[in-house]
Amino acid sequence: MEKSLKAGPVGKTILIVDDEFGILEVVEFILSDAGFNVISALNGQEALARLEETVPDLVLVDFMMPIMDGAGVIKAMRADDRFREIPVILTSGMPEQTIKERCEGYDAFLRKPFRTERLMEEISRLIGRPE
Image (cartoon, rainbow, N blue to C red; front, side, top):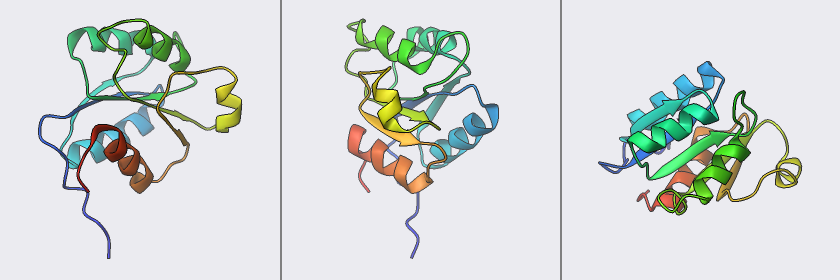
């Protein structure tokens, strides 16, 4: 029996940051369908601009992006009192061990391609969404 994804909390906002438009669009659809408010950005610089507009409950950010990568986004977030406590899920096609050498400050890691169920589990764990 498949679990429904339609149990998202009203009012919870997630910022998705990924330079691959196809991935961004699919994840945006999945999270919107689950009941989340979704904001998106195609690179790290754009993500920081979005943070100035709306403070999300969680950030889902890709590691490798042009202009500013995921490590830069996380570093900037952790240096700012307004964003320091926002949970961050880092995604990448590279193994986490490789990422750990270049990036710190994230709360969860998902290796691409990741399953929707795994994404929802991490979101639930980090922002207390009931299953």
